[in-house]
Image 1: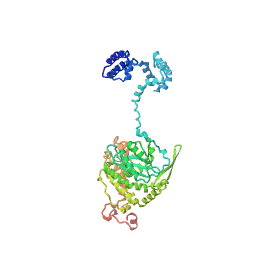
Image 2: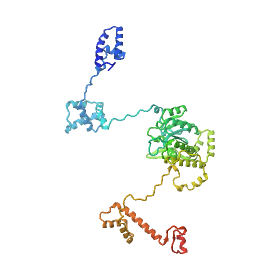
Image 3: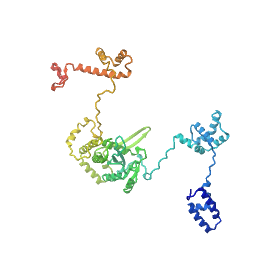
Image 4: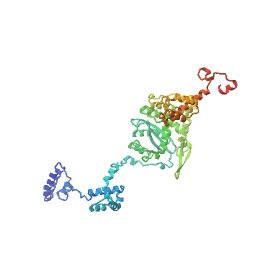
Length: 522
C-alpha cells in the first residue's frame, strides 16, 4: 500500500493520469503532478518518472528471477561436496570432472546430460553460493557476528607488555580485584590497584561497586597522594575503565590512556603480579560486601601502602632473552619502591627529601600491627561474625614484638588466610568387614605374631571361602599394624604406672637402681 490506496487502484490512477499528464502543457503538468503526489505520497521526482512512462511502478517490475540451477543440480552438487570431504568451492571446481567420472565409473552416480553440463560449468563462487545453506546446517547454525568495537574503545590505543621499554615514574597499570568469594552473584566490594612500571610503587583503593564514576573519584584521590605525577594509565578492556568518564578525565589531566589487548593477561603482567603479592596476600579470597567492608579495606590500604612502598623490597625484570625453548631472565637487585624513586633522576630533589623524611618517621612494627588488627576484622566480616565498624585502638607494640619471636610456631599468622580446623574423625563410614572374625585373628596373632596381613587374609579365605576380597587387604593390614603398636606399647611400659596422678605420673611401680634411673626416667 502507498498513499492509503490499493495496488490495483494505484495502477488504474497511473494509467488514467499518465495519459492526461503526457498530453498537457507545462503549467497543467505542474497541477496534475501536485494532485498525483498528494494522493499517492510519492516523491515528486519519482512521480514525474512514473507519469512520463520512463519508470514502471514497483509492483510491475518485480519478476521472478530465472533459475539456472534447479533442485537436480543442487542435489548432485551436495553429494559431490560430501564425497570430496566438504572442500571449498575453489578446490571443488577443478575436482568435479575427476570426481564425477570416478563415481560414474564405479556405479555410484548417474547424472543427466543437462545436469552434468550445468555442474561442470558452475563457477567456484556459484558452487559456494549453492552450498551455503548446507554448510550452515552442517556447521550447527549461523556463526555469531563479531561485535563491533565501541566508539570509546577505538579512541583508546593498545599497549602490550613489550611496549613499556624504560618509562619514567608516573606510567602506571591499573586493574580491579573482586572480593566475591566463591560466587560472582550479587553485590560485593572491589579493590582498585595501581602500580608504577618504573619503581613498583603501588596504590590501592576500596570500591563498594564497580562503576566508571567511582574509578574517576578513586584516581583523583590516589593521584594527589603519589610522589610523582600520574603520566600514563594502562587498563584492561573492562567497561569500568574504557568509558566516557575515564577517557574525559585522562584527557583533561593530560594522562596518556592506553589499554591491553583483549584476553591477553600478560600485557598487564606488572599489575597482575601486584594483585597477588599485595591485595590477595593482605585481604585473601573471602567475600566482602557493603560499606563496612569497604571502610575496613580503606583503613587496611592506608597502613599497607606505607608498609609495602617503604619496607617491602621487590624484584624488577631488566632483560628477558629466548634461546630456543629456554627463556633467560635477568633482574635488578631487590629494592623497595621508595629506594627506586630516590635513585631516579626524574624525581625532584624536594620530593626525594620529603620521601626520606617520611621514611625516617615510619615505624614498620606499628604499621604491621595495624595491618594484622584490620585483617582480623576483615576475616570476621568475611565470616559474618565481626561487628560493623572498627574503632581506633591503642597498639601494644611490646606484646606484638614478643609474639613475633614465636609466630612461626602457630602456622599462618594472617587472620584473612586461616582455615577452620577440621574436626577429628572418630566415626566409620562403612561396616568393619573383620568385626566378626577379629577374635579369631587375635588368637592367630598371639600364637604367631610375625604373620603378615596377606597370610592372615589367605587363612580367613580358607576358613570362609568367598567372604573376603582382595580390596580388603589394606583394611586388615591397618588392623594388624594397630594391634602390633598396642602390643609393643604394653611390652615397653610393662610394670609402669601410666595414670596421671600428681608428680608421680609415668613413674615405675618397682624400684630402679640409681645408676639406671637417670637414663630412663628423670
